[in-house]
Length: 326
Image 1 (cartoon, rainbow, N blue to C red):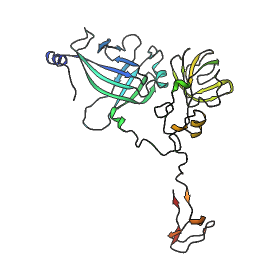
Image 2: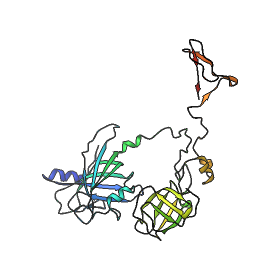
Image 3: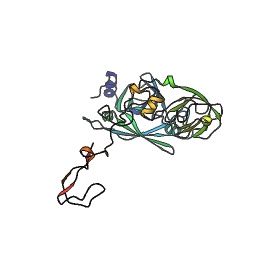
Image 4: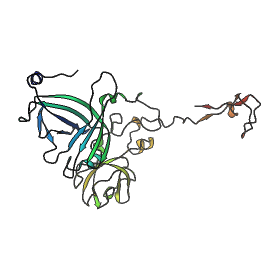
């Protein structure tokens, strides 16, 4: 059930015509917020200014329909971000921002703002239409298509907490891992200009120490961007990124963080964190077969006769061989 302030209800009762605009609030996992509107002017509400696409270099918006229902069904909302060559988000083109994962797992609040007219950009009331988490991002020319999943999608959390898998159930630097990312941060710089994905650095750690980790640029054309590392080689400190960026220049600085392949040997040898390892590397695989007592062939049970195989003789009619899987 949606609530409304007395001022909002009074506006609805005392005006035969109202103007309307959508308000979009994007909250990134880092905690940063963007406020945009599809109105023809900026709108101020609740202490925040929602920027209009018609002014400066802000993006435009289009969305699908919303609905209200009772239950645990997961509703999705399609939101399109429209842009041109002059549109910037966090200092870069929206397509580049999206390709670098800027919208991944961001929370989106879509509301509708109502007012008698736009002579006063402070609206009298706002009604929430949809709140969700971005689940899919598609980049097209001049448009970014976002699929925003309703918050009930969070109920699809996997249980139980622990899976009996060879690899660790933790994520590096999460609460269960207990390691702190800042303690493993390494400052580095580009030693020679490279390509959009491969460049040499002054790092000296062992091969693949930073593989599956990430770097955060602290200067240059990519300042502030977080990039995931595909591989790292000790020779020349070469880093290969998972996705392309603006080619870094010699002298560009960054902070690098190691990655983890979730193996027991890595947890012990690289991070000295074996007490918090949550993998089960010694669980037998489903294909393991159990031999009979005293290493004798497996016992026969009912089944058709067949030719002998290896040390298992031909069985008489009505017998076959039983293998027990662990």
